[in-house]
Figure (cartoon, rainbow, N blue to C red):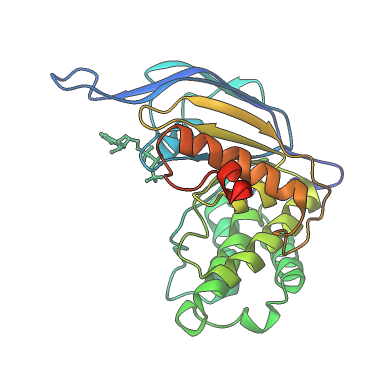
Length: 277
Ligand SMILES: Nc1ncnc2c1ncn2[C@@H]1O[C@H](COP(=O)(O)OP(=O)(O)OP(=O)(O)O)[C@@H](O)[C@H]1O
């Protein structure tokens, strides 16, 4: 049986993405370049978001970091070790919560203990603590069909974090939620992340969500994606649930929207014309 790592003082691990690109169908007559060479150095414990137009290669990049998809060039290091197979000390969350219908919320969270052969009691204690922290104790013994979409996604968050992974990869995890629930789940995620500060790569279509959550935001160009901006977000934590009125928040959001307008991803009124009108 594997023991769960002690959490005292631990944070995530560094990830290096060096000259990494992807061409699908490389050996065919119609190769398709999904990602231009990308370089991103992510320090241990950083919360980094990737934003960009649909199809620019965000998920492709994440799958390569997870070791689930072969690169066409470059190297990826996770905690200094080359990623040449699926990485293991990782929590992965996608848009679909993927809870098992026949397991209660608690037993869904305990899946990690079962699959990874971790000590059940240690994981169960941590799971109870996380349910409590997210004010979800009442949901522990319910089945997914008895929970709202937001609750299911929050249970899924607990499952992503319960084994205290060093790396968390999230691909548009809140995409299916309504705007209010999204705010709540964003705040919950920040709270959970602050406990141990694993390294997070977070893909989102919501610029506001990226600014609300991240230490740093990578802005990518349309397909084939390349990095067009690398923004450090210097807002204090924990961040308030409603950020909209803070001028610093708005200036980060505007900076990213301006990139999207320049690249033709967004069309409409620029901040300058907004101010002039
Ligand atoms: N297995 C594959 N074979 C061929 N092309 C693929 C494959 N997977 C992805 N693609 C293409 O690569 C490009 C990048 O896809 P990817 O899913 O990484 O984009 P994305 O930025 O995550 O998009 P979205 O925001 O819509 O999820 C897209 O044009 C997609 O159609």
